[in-house]
Image 1 (tube, rainbow, N blue to C red):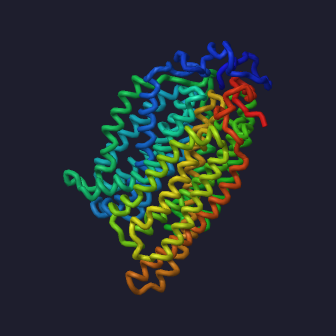
Image 2 (image 1 turned 45 degrees about the vertical axis):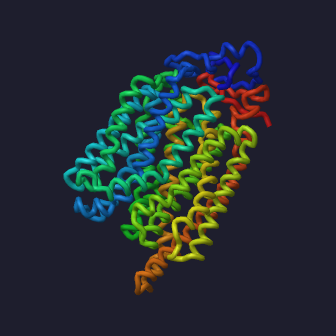
Image 3 (image 1 turned 180 degrees about the vertical axis):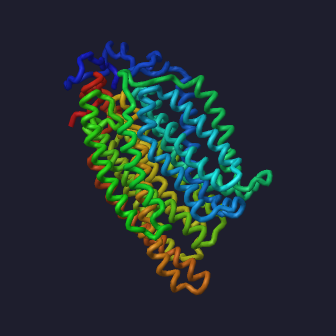
Length: 546
């Protein structure tokens, strides 16, 4: 909701009206810098430093989750060696977290809308910290697997509240800066996990081997729990909602039926039941849509707010987010395998190689939402897709030219180009998706954003078996020397990156469906903005004219 708007009390009314932020009326808005905190939507936190402390807390929690997703991969050899875990258990240590996380995100977001985003965030970060302790002190692989599943479930309660709290706490004119910071955190988290995991594992702190990768979450989580209870302002949907238990069951079943075969398919030899499960998931998710439509019409408390997809920016952004997740899922896994198994680099060397990428993502993310998007709008995201695709093609060329003798400094240029492109996408994309979402549905929308990103990643990981291992396995059957084996991984890496480049081209085309200028950027805050009233709450989402 932009400055100068007033909500109406008429339910289920749909009107279009032009407003302006100019003039005295703007001073009376509850969405401006003088707003005082309440527990209802349509207001923001006090315009003092407290909300920036709250932002730092939720961003730290988001960073902790991002790092935890990738930090385990580096430590797998140590876990296998020290804990005596079987290959199947190793698979579940990584897959268990991802499955619990993806399956619970939509539910976690809706619970925040119903019971309060601050409350669910604190429960989530507390549970995540406890689960991290159980992982670090696990006495056997079975306990580690169970603790990782619990950790993923707690992350599903915590992570959706991050974007929801930002959306409900900051007025529209400040969110661009905030999402710029969020994009920077995403960039740092993307490559900090492997680097931090390498440092902690190879350092063997206090003789604990792999355990510090989990125990490091304890001081961070405890600090977040204490500070969050003090600085985060509570917010929830103004209308009393009920948890849709049938919707929870359907969305959880549908996502598990889709993601479980993708996660375990290659290990199990792609059995027939896996394909049947993935096909059946579409039926279950279709039943979910039909049920949620009836549920919304009956009592207005669906788990998935389907009316969100009537907002063009949200629907288009969700499509871009899903396909972008596929690209990232392929790239980050094959990149790690290429460096460690193909080139024979140590985890620390591989982790250090990613530093230029991380710096480029963080820098570009900050610039995109604060300076570029207000001036150029959607063109910035499209430039990011083209830039990232260019970096991928450059990486393919260098990997082919230098072969197994390639050095980290030679990878720096393509990684910087790719990182800059990714930074131009991640921060403004989140802003574009949420910019026109009514605040009462911020939790549901945030859960959907994170869910489709995880689904995209899972689809990307599943495709790795085809676009990467399909080439590697063929080459390895003919390999008789370590050099030939390394070349097999290098060939698979180049082939997989070709697919990633094609996916980036698809993303570029999908971005034409995004609004030319996200609401709240440039003229979106001025007289040219129309206001589309939400049918139930009277909340209105800004829609740009033309």
